[in-house]
Amino acid sequence: MTMNFYQKTLLKGFIVSNLLALFMVGLFKYTKLQDNGTLVFSIFVIVPLIMGIVSSWFWIKVDLKSKPIIGYSILNGLLAILLSYVFLREGVICLLIVSPLIFAFIITGAFLGRTMFRKNNQRLNVSVFSLLFVVFVTDSLSEHNYVNLVADEIVINATPEQIWKHVVAFDKIEKKDNYWLFQIGMPSPSQTTVTGHYKGAGRKCIFSNGYIFDEKIVTYDVNKDLTFDIIGQPLDPEIMGHIDILRGQFLLKDNGNGTTTLIGNSWYRLHVFPIWYYDIWAKSITRNVHLRVMEHIKVLSEKG
Image (cartoon, rainbow, N blue to C red; front, side, top):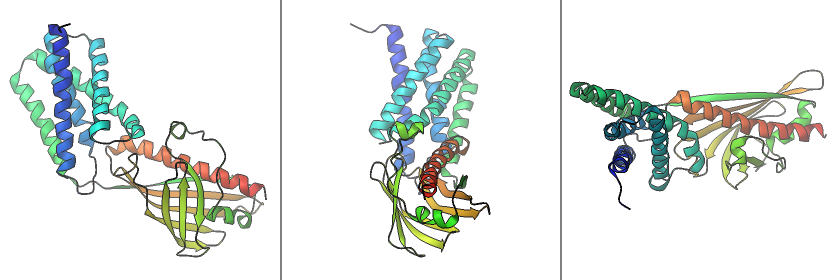
């Protein structure tokens, strides 16, 4: 069955916008505009905006209403995500995290494009595309660096002496994951081991899928402070090039009444922008890693 004009026009919007986006992202990644592999905010904001505008340039010919524009824009976003999975080797959970951002700006771009092309003002159209291109290039060439700390604490009905050994290392966590990202496949912390109980000893944090974070103890203050640097992290597509875990720390504060406040700190560096979006996810994931480990330490310590 041959396609009619309406179908051909929709298809052209999908194909051209995704080919342009793939070209822009590929150009960014493979020319290494960011030497440290950082993915700047333009990849997730400017490129989807341009996709929406370009698709609108075709769709304006069939005068789509608002609901079809939203629906076709979401479909366009799904196609972009599929292409990212195939050609850019992005992880499934990573793509799930980025999808709301992609959908939002493709839809925004589609409505912006409809407004632009209805006015039929070539000067306006050129100005908008030129501005977006300048932002993309400037952002791509700018320095990006973001390091953050996430801290959590729980109270344990045990003394620091009873808790300390479980802080340094603990046997496998048997409790089922209750964080939704862990439940759908993101690896969760499972066990830790150490080569010795002293400053400079090696430590390993083993995750549920067998991935291992190699660590080195840099502070070993018995019953008070265990701090370790991450010296090696797994080459997993969900985290590789997106986040570096830099340091972890457990602090024990004796409350003087038979209980102890256990504080977990983690430092990380993000390589994906915009920070206002991705740091929400980074904090949430880090916090749930903390709580899974700390609640396990609590159970072990309170058993005596």
